[in-house]
Image (cartoon, rainbow, N blue to C red; front, top):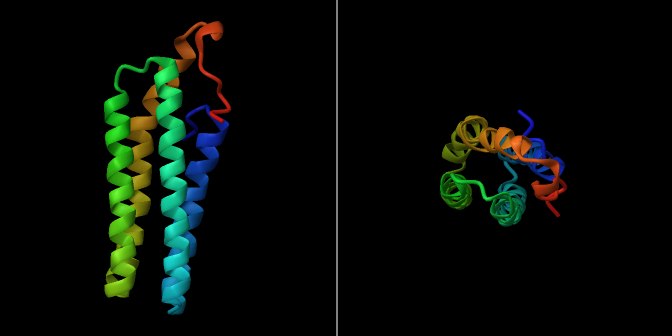
Length: 132
C-alpha cells in the first residue's frame, strides 16, 4: 500500500506500530502507558497531516480537500481514543482494532490515489518525494 513517498510510507507503518503498542498496553492494563503512546500517535498524525498537505499543495493535487478531511477525521478519532483510554479501557481496546481497519481504508480510498497523480507528472514538476 505504498504511496511512493518514503516519509509517508514510514508514517503509515508507524501508525500500525502505534496501534499495536497501544493495544498491548491496554491488554497489559497499563493505562498510563497507553495514554502516552496514544499522545505520541496523535503527534505523529498531526505532523504527517502537515507534511502531506504541503506535498499535495506542491503537486497541485485536485482532490486535496478529501485527503485533508481524512486527516482531520483521523486526528479526531485519535483524540476520541485518548478519551476512551481514560474512561473506558475495554471500549478503547475495541476501538484500536477498528482503527486498524480505518487506516487501511484511508490508504486505499485516499492516499493511494495521489500516487498515480504525482507519478503521471513530468519529473521536473513533481514535489520533493522525501516530503521533508
